[in-house]
Image 1 (cartoon, rainbow over the protein chains, first blue to last red):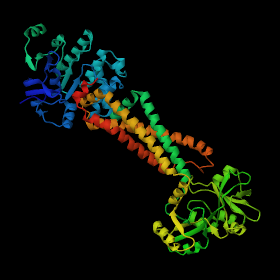
Image 2 (image 1 turned 90 degrees about the vertical axis):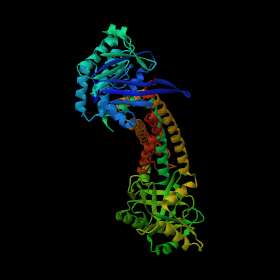
Image 3 (image 1 turned 180 degrees about the vertical axis):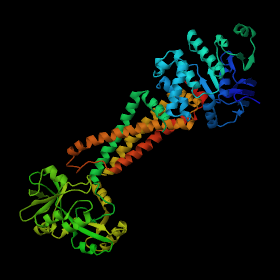
Length: 235
Length: 386
């Protein structure tokens, strides 16, 4: 029996249309990400890394095969059902933060909480706590444009975990940051995984990501390949 | 609307303040045009016009007269609760041909019986008029315009009606009457028809129109047909209409005010629909990525659609308020300038309600397409958008 947040992709085939033809991304991809895992997926651009995140997050659909999280089979679910499920179970972290530019840091973090039954007071309390965890209590009232890249990404992570999802999907979270900021973000993600038990799937080009990840998989042309030499470095 | 949606609507409307401001201004101007023209039309037509009251005039034309004897025949109809006759003096202030004064010769008691629910013609006023054959009751607006008071002597010169002294007619102000509603036009006076009729050199016992108040429950259209049929084979054929239709027809002798108003307002609104609709489509396209992020966070398409619609509703609501405020500020000044053309400009409750409905309709119309785009936007495509 799978745990509640075990992620399973079974015989997944996915392609994208290009003109009249279709570009294949995966053929018969099968993988499992157990609950509590911190998986880094690396690979060249166009290898399908982000597509895996999109499939797990229910924002893209498979051509064939099945995606399931715990006992929930995402394949075939309606948009409305997926939206509801995503709000409760998934937190997304984007490369370019994707914060609402006219909302303050606190308001950005509060956004996903607006979909929960929490009262305004409880929401604000939760926002304060999360901003404290990511070290941005002092910047709660600042607009994204008034924050550095690293700070914006910390707001992005705070927003992703605000509704307390079990799974975090991170699409190149350090891709737009300098080394110091990137390391801070990786440490924060590691903290969320180790201390709070979040399952994290992170797509990255950053070789040092494997420092914090429990597993690193390399994807190339729709297939996972093992690169022992890099795994050795990480160890 | 929940707090969340208000927050997002606010965010979207304030991100490009100049654009939102210009949109609100455009909408405000369109509703200002609507407001001014509606008040112009209302001023022309008069809010006192009632669809259930009837007006009988000569079938030949508005300037023709009818014999006063027709009143008795009309009064005998069982559907008629009260009937009165009105003769227009067609006069101006003595020495000033440009200062036209609305003046009607009437039988005060029957006039009050027909029009008492529009004008406050209480027994004291009627008694004051009854006490003086050359007396006149002056409407409040006219009295204030001219600075007239009870006891003042007023002399008018008729363009058509002559007495033994020529075309000058002098009256003593016996009282000042008000409308039952503030919007009722009281820019005229009434004099006693018995005095006027006796003093006339020519055209005695002829009147311009009859006013009829039907009994409750009577169908005004049927009664109108009954009256016209009764006089169909007489020397004085009649045309009977309800007051609203009569006033519209009367105005159309000069210009189809209603059509002109509708055309100008339609052009203004169609322009505004195109501007707002186009701007909203671009505004939503600009933030496709944000819409994608909201969907990723768990905001449903329907909820996002409501947010976009709420934006256009807010824009139109603020624009409407601005337009109507501007109208309220401007029509008193405009009314002063146009006093010789239109008795009084005012925004009727009906005009304001219609403006509200139009604003809501336009908001939904202009917001629908961008809202639908937002609803249908696939998340993956939205997130790729920069």
